[in-house]
Length: 124
Image: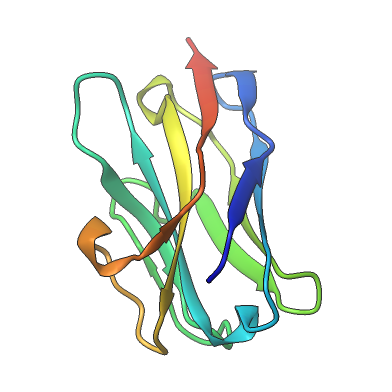
């Protein structure tokens, strides 16, 4: 079992930056592949970024490539999402997710553990 708690969301102007954090409980964090998803009002949850347990493999949605960076600190049981050059279309609730696998995945059904979400709002 793992529990995930996101933080770092907020209101930012277009072009600005935010860093989201996801703190995980449990002693086996280093064995989980981690991802960030987001969901805007009236839309389906969509993949943002994923990271392998070692941090050696990453995957990004085309819409965020070059702007967002996913990273992890296994010593702190924490995964991060650095978001730069934010756009109004990045506005959504951002969710952290974990799966017990060495392989990253970009579909919500592949993840068994979810945080409660943190709101990110980008104003134009």
